Every structure is written in C-alpha cells, then in structure tokens.
Length: 183
Image (tube, rainbow, N blue to C red; front, side, top):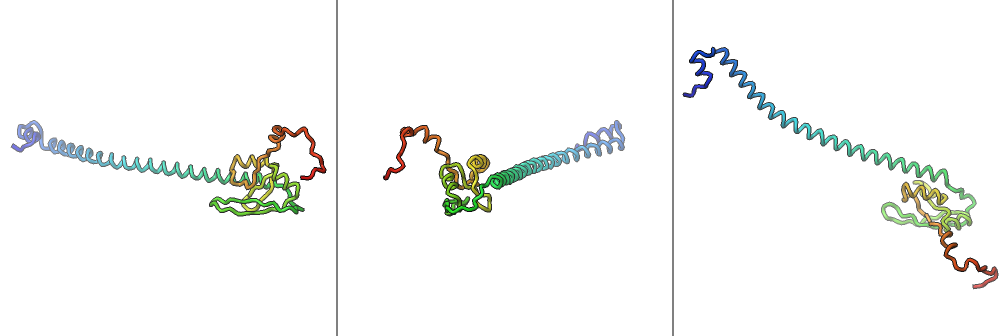
C-alpha cells in the first residue's frame, strides 16, 4: 500500500521504467532547486544588506572628506585674506595688549607693538587683530568682517565701530569744549 502513484502506473502498464525514472529525477531536481532558491534568496538578502551598509558608510566617509576639504579651503582663504591685508607695524612704539582664547578654553595675554595711530584705530574699531595660525596681524575691520563670516575664531580683537551711533545720539554735539578746560 505504500506504493507511489508512479509505481501503480508502472504496474498498470501506463508508463515504462525509463519515463518513471526521468520523472522522479526531474521531481528531485525541482526539489533541490527550490531548496537552493530559499538559501540563495537568504544569501542574496544578506548580500544586499551588506551592499546597502557599505554604500551608507561610503556616503558618510565622502561627507566627512568633503567637510574636511571645505574646512581646509576656508582656512586657506582666511590666511590669504590676513596676509594680503595686514597693516605694516614697523616703527611701532606702543604696546597693544589683548587676550587670545584658545580652542581648549585657555586664555593668554598677548601684545603687539603698533603705532599710536594704529592703537587708536584698534580701540575705535577701524582695525582688528587676527591670527593666521603663526602670527598675529593687524588688519582693517572690513576684512575682519569677511573673515568673521567664514570663521570667527581667527579673529582675536574685533571691536565694533561705535562712532556713528555716538554722533547721532550725542545731545552736546553742538557745544564746543574749550581747550584749556581742566577737570
């Protein structure tokens, strides 16, 4: 009673042994293909997952490289702006003191020898002090504003010019102060 349908057809004479054997072989091959398909589909899924993860890692690496390249380009632009616009300080006899806060939070008191006119312009906000990575340079405040747009950490002293607001709000601007006035 455990005879298969193929054996029963063989006994009845409907099929011969060759056809029965080839049918069994074909059925076996189909079963093997089905099992391989299941294994392949799982393997293919794993390969696709790894491929997607690799693409994400590559995108992140490219983003980091682009960010580094952009930071390097900005640093080069800042250094070039400072070097092209630095004011000559030869003959400076006034020591101008300022504080430089490093990226790690440490503060240092630094000084530059500048002329008396440069010292006044630094205080009034017409000039600024910038650090190009090696030296401190005195630059015009217009250039300092351009540098601040790129990276404000390169600016050490950047006083905003307040002269125009004082002139507008000064109620005693019409009165002359005598030269010989003693306080």
